[in-house]
Length: 571
Image 1 (tube, helix red, strand yellow):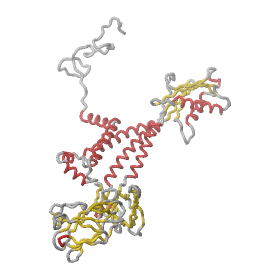
Image 2 (image 1 turned 30 degrees about the vertical axis):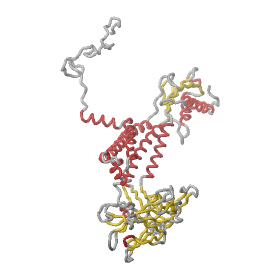
Image 3 (image 1 turned 90 degrees about the vertical axis):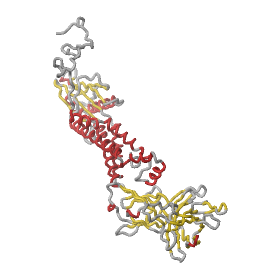
Image 4 (image 1 turned 60 degrees about the vertical axis):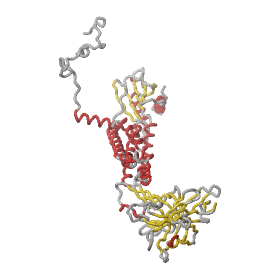
């Protein structure tokens, strides 16, 4: 029974199908404070309560959605920015201390928030773990769905083809069963390379349909991309746990042992164990450097070293800039170089109180170098501190003023100021070996009250002021600054990065297409030996090559018809 639309009273809220009237569709308000279930007389509808389990299920679905995974990925990139802006305590604690002293108000706040240890902070780790869980929760159900789709049959042919974007038709020799067999072979391709997954169905009445689908590799590439992201996250986290990095300075003729105590600076992950350091020693045999004769810009640096591992003889190797040396699972990089004056200090009685090579750090392109020599073990009197510069090729520009004009040691000059007093080495407070803490020290002056400056060339000996002894400039060897890095995850990071790139490229460039053929007997009837073929194709998303794909499939079917029993081509 229907109601005449001309006599039907319009609802205040628009048209309401007959039989669905209720308090809301009729424009009535439910009783205030009414209760009851939907559909009960006078009762206000109530939404079911989610409960704890429902809210947890909702939160899990939100976390494992693709939009949240992308949001977390972007958030992780943003969270990593402070690690490139602010100095990190694990890499450069001195710069962190300098920043805290220069910013007494902002520095402690940033320190409490973890901005000087971004990659080990709670908030960065939380984003990292949430991204990991989100990716895993997103991949698992999609993988199950993809596997079921790959094992399933292609979707059957729809009843009507006239609304599909790509269409074709032909009339071929043979019965629908024969043409369907040829179509399956033409669409499927050779056994080693399947073009389409094909399924043939009998629709009754002598009509056959062929359903073909390709492009499962697109979803496979998408899953590989996401799995590779998970692999990258795991690899990076493993590398942060097990890696170590140390810097060491080696003077010509001396050796370095791969023990934690031999490093000048050393930092490692929380999962690192000092016992995992593989034993080896490295001796710096010589160092070669070359500079442009006109601009004095550096051209090449080469460190000649001898590597000795337990149970084997020494092996001579070379380390160059951007050409690290692989040894005992670690990469050794040439980070810097300079000069280390070999000096000897004797007390007034001639007893050697200090002897060794002291690295001086270069300050410019002509290797004007600054350094400090600390002599704490004196036999009597105050401790001695010597602070000054080394000029590889000295040129006098005024009385008592020199400068370096060439980075090569053609005429080296060592200029030192003398300080006496307590060096503070016995206070238990770490000191920078390249700086002299002048607190508690007194600078030596001459009779006119001017600071004393000692000038020495290799092989020369000068008297220290105030009868402190003598200082000899013995030789000028070179030193190299090496950076040793060990990260067991680097190979895995590279592998997963390549897999991610391959998966992303596959998901972007492999088309997902479906082709359907319907085969019915010709107009002359089932016994005519002719088959009318109608075809349609559909792609996921816009696909400009869809019609060409369908035409190629029909061309292959016609080609198979040429080789058929009759030897005639179809029309």
